[in-house]
Image 1 (cartoon, rainbow, N blue to C red):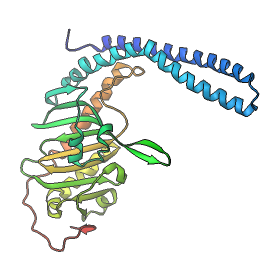
Image 2 (image 1 turned 30 degrees about the horizontal axis):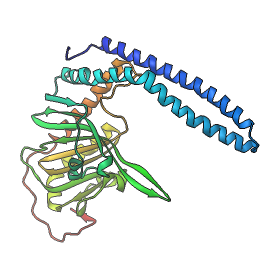
Image 3 (image 1 turned 60 degrees about the vertical axis):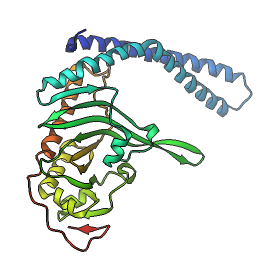
Image 4 (image 1 turned 180 degrees about the vertical axis):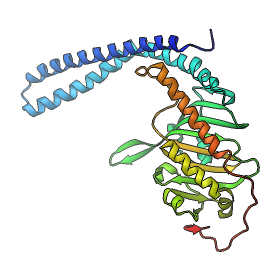
Length: 327
């Protein structure tokens, strides 16, 4: 079997899956009408009030129609979609990225991703409950001679609301890890930069010291937490702060950035998964989305891997506080 597939060949598989998808919806719609008619006829034979009859009819129709949808999905759509998506992931994604010529040592595993421990230790987003943690579509490689990993991440936790347990999504998006962010600097402990739209549940735990910079514009948009203030001042130079703001504006989504040791993590909050094939979008447009995701990765590398020119650490300052410290 060839390792790649052409756009035209993949488009044939997509159209086949899309056709089955439309048939599935048509069959489900017809089944819903028959169910509605049948349930209403049954309810008309009961002595209940009209309000009760209408409520029971709607409830029964919705419930049985969901069952019909699940049945037709299994019967008509599941197999052709799986064939399309499997080939999309295994024979199209990596070849499309490789054609860009921007990244080296590329490897792609649709079923792999970051571990719960990876995200917990990075402290870039709330990691949630381990049993509900999801991460897939792991792309690894090199950019500017630095190893990276790029993956979908979804974190959730179970919460109690009244008498019911509900599953809350804390973070849904992508996380990028660069194994080295500077050829000379190392972050002693966590340095976390959260866009202020990142709610407390989304950002998870924070380092000990809340830090403010001399930039009012940066402080108005981001919150900074550090295990050590002087380390924060050493890493977060005015040049880097400007780069972070430009990156957020370029992405147009909520971001968070953490530094720990030699590594840097970038989280981007958005609901669209990377590298998933869809049947209602032409292959050419899906290719453009893949290239767009890779441009996002490239932009992150361009911003952060070259953002910090070598410089000496600042002199220690006195009067440390655990919150509201300005440096």
